[in-house]
Image (tube, rainbow, N blue to C red; front, side):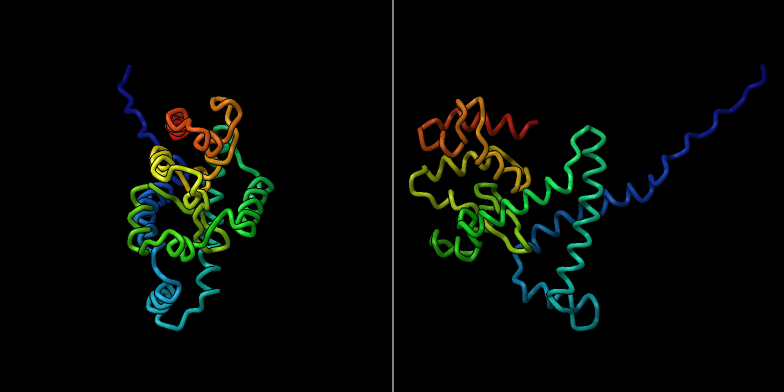
Length: 211
């Protein structure tokens, strides 16, 4: 039988753009962490320089919204492959819930948080990088959970639990702290911490982060 060379395996459709996406996404994530600490004025100034013309904050926000939509589309495609697609209704409900938390001051603007915690913005930045605290974004503004300011909770314990959650998104960490769990006898982690069950909450946090 004559030798027949095997045909080279063809890359999947869209493989090159997909590979480029992940390369850029990794770089973008690193830069975005630094840019998140910039003031709105600094962001507008940088946006103006990158365009060689005056940029408006609303214009830049619209560009970020478009980028966010595309990233969410990719994320949902990946989630759908594992049967974990998040519907638009679920996303809207989550956004509405966080808006309610802002209205009810369960989420505190970063400027207010710094003032009430009696720390500098630099100290907050260090705490965020160390995962001792976390933030969520609501309508383009950064907010931190009020429970980091709650005198009824042991601050070091709350921060240690936040650290145990690692690099999970802020929204996921917020969900952990405020959702009742069977492993905590039906209590939320915040309620369990208030009851002195720090060790159990930390174990639950580690398990949540490893899912």
